Length: 350
Image 1 (cartoon, helix red, strand yellow):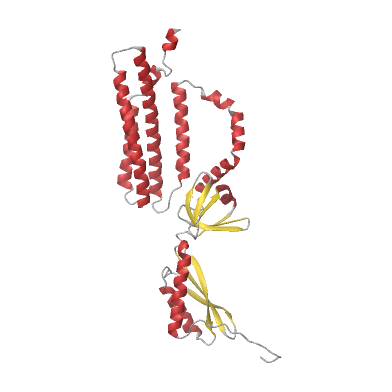
Image 2 (tube, rainbow, N blue to C red):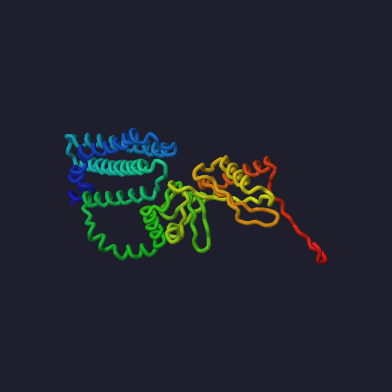
């Protein structure tokens, strides 16, 4: 009976087989590799991404220090000539702490490497944290299951089989959450938009416009025109009509209308409008702006002036520049904007 009570809860032999020098060197090398990749290939990242990675590296370096310290203490205790049961028990606990610390360093290093890979492939656009978080979760679950099987001898197959009913109940309870999660993953695979893109979401008669800030487990977060946050569930976006206004290979067309006096020369007025719009800040030079007459009556001509821009989020500011430039040019030319003309009829005489 005493021998059973004296046996450590953590088997010494299993810990000794798992905590070896080679895996420890591999884990530290993986952390060092993530730092080298950052210094060599990611020098041109934005300041925000540099800050994010530096915070991750500070946290990683602290965990690497803890892991190395625990590994040294475990190695020293393992080499102790005193083979008392208490020494073996303490050594097992140090070994378990070393193993857990190494697993944490491995997960954090892998997480940073995935961030770096996504940053490297998307130097301009942002990357969704959803993919990184899901990868981290699955990797952590896999390592915990492996440790439970290797150290404690837990049989995972019967455990998974007996938890089928629990999984079914949990799945029903988290139906909306899981639906949003898988919808978010589907959106990332299809890539109808990326972080930084301006999109328009139309669903159930509602229209929401904003710039994609983040894609989380549950929702896509947009920053609206007036800096408001729009949090739209991924399931809603997956079923909605989405228009992306940030395609780099296609310019974005916008237009303004101006009422010009009917007596104005059409050809010179069209040239004046095109020249004024071309000088406005934010308007693309190619393709050239276009001015067309879309309506006319006895007092004015209605010109619709179309132009292209690159930044959807700046369209309201650019329209202000366009209107200002056109009005000033019309005033300088002596034309101005056509005044509203009213015709009053009284007793049959106009």
